[in-house]
Length: 96
Image (tube, rainbow, N blue to C red):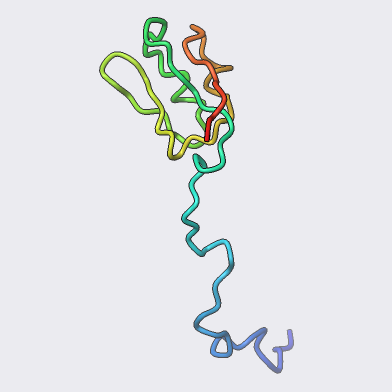
């Protein structure tokens, strides 16, 4: 088997400030562009944690007797409402 005459690439030629765009921090949170937000009916919530299990951004916060939502990270997808077996969550329109 023959050896290559030159290495595949020379790592010393890669600039030290090379950074993909996605690695730059963005100050915008999902809650900044949400159009619908979840509201919990505290009388219906039995803390079954199904909303917590299905939330794609983990914005569900446990309270003493119910679950609530961190609206800074909630993107308003409504998965929690669709998956709640007790109908304790409803989505309302976000107001500016």
